[in-house]
Figure 1 (tube, rainbow, N blue to C red):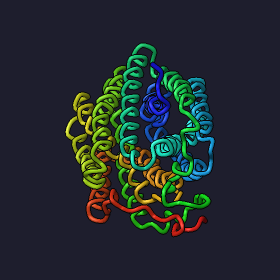
Figure 2 (tube, helix red, strand yellow; figure 1 turned 135 degrees about the horizontal axis):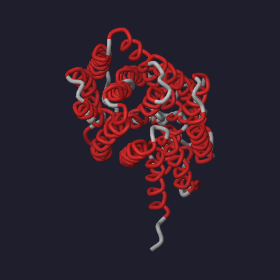
Figure 3 (cartoon, rainbow, N blue to C red; figure 1 turned 90 degrees about the vertical axis):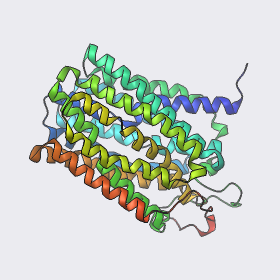
Figure 4 (tube, helix red, strand yellow; figure 1 turned 45 degrees about the vertical axis):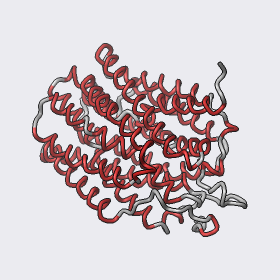
Length: 414
């Protein structure tokens, strides 16, 4: 029986999110293990190259969002970015110098900044605002499932062939995402709706993207600060755990890191489904608070034992926090920018803000480890996470029931 156009697009988006999962999140802890185990880099150097790659992503997030707002060739943009990431993975096993590793990872990170706003825009353009929460929950569900499968494959291949196998796996996933992307109908994407214009209220030419919507929207700015603190606390935790595992058992470090990722991703799947099913009914804030409160708890629990199985068990809690946050993030941004036509540039700008936190996280944590040890680093991250939770609890409003902003009242472009 032939698939309907809507069903085909839904399944194609499922596949796109599944295969882009590992590509979208980057090499992360696998790169840390590879550089530590194969090239014997110092933790501070590993943190620095990851920070520089994070800065490259940070500098391109907002322009990427503005580009996605404007372009009507969203699928081609995603395809080009996937090819850049593929080449970056394939060349990595043949280089070892700091400058070359930094260059390839920075280019890959810059290309990867396209994926989040593009997938959000394509999803919104196909489903419309009323079904966006459900589609976003489904996107994140397949994203986490893809991460779990990729981590399982990475653990098995790296055990058999060494840490370098992860790079070839990521390249293969990127190529598979191109096939799924080609199956998404370009005609099904409403590009005005995809940028956040209200399909009912707007009856004129589309407005250009502008950063002023961010500067004039206080709840959006506040949410950006909360996100930055969350990622400042969270980004370095898994790489630090990976390094501790490598010091305990070098051969088992990559498989155990994969176990950490798989366990967390399996929990993220029901967390994302919960957001898709209940975020419109319960509101965004209760679910956000549940995700934020887990992070300081994790930071403290990591310090209680160096046992590798304990570390893996604690890492599973990341599934709650990251699973809820990942699914809720585009929903909150859409709530706060609906009707302005500036959804994707705002999404990119806030991704830049929390990307700064993530980029600094690895560098700061690496320095604390060298000066005071791993426990001090985990406790420092826990304090930052507690501050993020407190700010969200006290100052952030509920966004689920806000009315769309009339485009005519949107802040002018800058």
